Image (tube, rainbow, N blue to C red; front, side):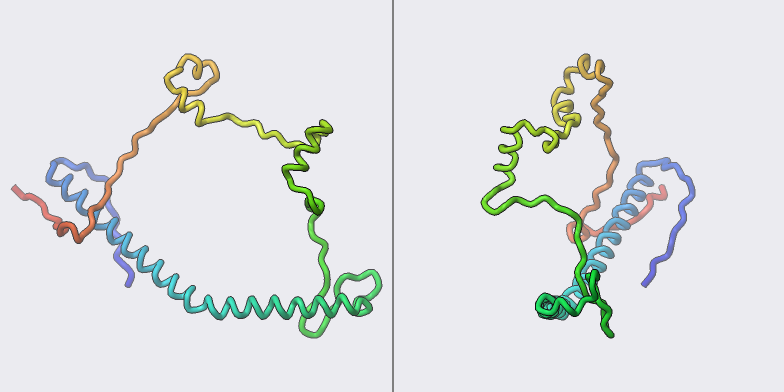
Length: 180
């Protein structure tokens, strides 16, 4: 059920009683928002759960049958026209696609061993060195303002205002105004 949209005009809170009312309203809306998101997530999860088994079975069947088709094509290379890597069939086009070139280790090698071999030969064109500012170190040195100033850095720690609603089960949420 859709909720009403409320448009608020620019307003200044004049009293502490009205502050309490505004906070109570925000807290109520935040709790309603949380409940609505939880309800939506529960419905989405229920839909995922309802289809998960069927999708898993389909994925497994697709993989098995694709392997069978691939094995057939490997045994019958004459199925493909000369200089072609695909063939049109009534229900689909089948064939081979060339992927992007990728570096892999040879049998018996690890990437650590490759790295050491490159370093031993001083083949630096095959090394990547990522140089970047260590922001964590700068924050840790925040008391050294003279040094940070010389390199154009200032450590900022902003405050953000928040309202954290209390759970409705802890205490009832009453929105009232003191008309005194």
